[in-house]
Length: 281
Image (cartoon, rainbow, N blue to C red; front, side, top):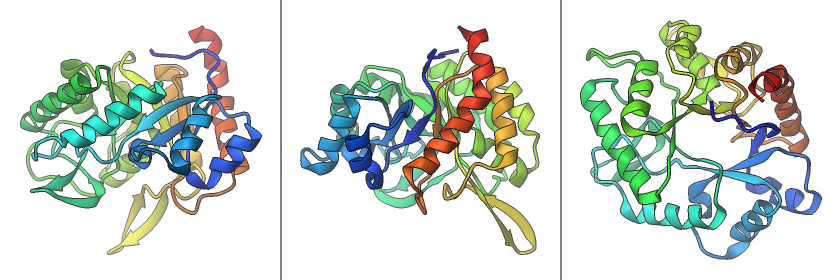
């Protein structure tokens, strides 16, 4: 199951907290850094990352490789990522099941793929290329989505399972995104959890979402700007029961609160996962 005994929940590393983390060394299980924020050589960000890595486990989470795009893979981006990976030796390197570029133009969002055989084989080839370039396994994360394609598709969990099986990647299971998509698209989130083999999930993400009303329809949006909802905490409990206490990360990317607030969210994740740690040990 890829468990790490004794590794408590982590927090997304944000620049607002760099100085406090370096000076105070708060009790946090680990940190996750957005890879692209640390590509530049030198400067305060890289210095802080190096100092934080000296005291904590770290993972790297990318948003810029545009894995699902039909554009050629950005090899310069991959080289920069490889250099960073070699320097910080992270627990995990992860990317998204999405695309964000076409014909050399980028959008500031993570867009969904159609879950077809053609898209699967494209993603398998891309994941293999990235893993070969890095010399290690990557994790692929499920994203939130707000539309459905008209072409016949398999369920997302079947697509992720096939991707992991054929490419050798692991799955970063974003529990909030499972819940958001279940509510937006009308499927049972428990079916999602049961549809993925226990051995492929290596990490969980937890985040907050907001509810909007668009054309008289209620939509849940993965905003990462608030506390994890009670429904997502309940689904997280089911996920830990299914997959074991794999490393869990709290994401909060907008309206960023105090470090203490994030630590409290991480402590709640630890409280939920703790009963399952003895079973996994």
